[in-house]
Image (cartoon, rainbow, N blue to C red):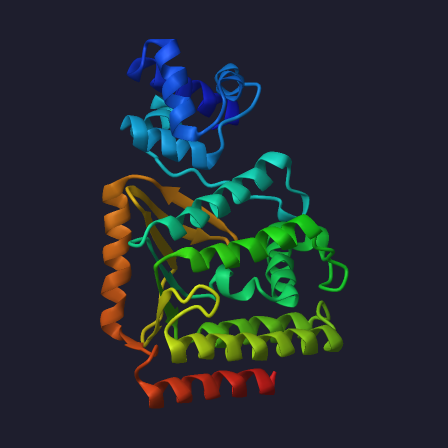
Length: 321
């Protein structure tokens, strides 16, 4: 669905819910905390509603997001997958990321906000504090997305400053949740090491670049182990629970709750997601994540021997790379 189609569906849903345009404008001013002129610009289509604004409007007026996110012809398939050209994103695509970060930022105003991330790869919010790791995952994404058409090396890849800033802001926004849960596949670092060794063997990552990645991985492990020891993020002191799954995880699932806004996400193709704002879908994803704790070991402020052994094994893997 195009942005224009989504905008038209949104306007149609709003008109049905609040036929009186003057009243609708007042509601949107109060809901979005913007001036009347800004509301009219959005209603005319001069300025698009942001992701965050759409979610807030839907909750305020009790409109299902599916009513205007999808046309009747695709209503049965509620998820739409879009590949982002991360190295050449347009303004709307940057805005989508910035809206998500702003949405996560509101978690600090909700003492009951929570987010859970069950992953078979390093969570984005963990590795995006390190430039070489941001660059590596973008490099792998480009390699798999374009294949032999564009065999760019890791060294040749130039990450836009704005994109780097987006990822770092995302990592910081994650810390605003009152409660955060991570469930990691016990092989998560082994998967990464295997990939790095492959790219090194085919000469797309140099020895010097590989060393920098290794240095950042050691730093990441130190930081992650510190969180496991304290059970919280240092900057916000918000609670963090880290589990290591003893069985392989099939994919990456994320569920987010801020006040009465529920979002369920499934990560696909390294850096993309499909998402649902439907509360029943959110519950299914949350239940799936919670079920994975049954076959996992909690390493935050407990399981000292298991925790020490886990981090020692990961450091050994990196050392041998």
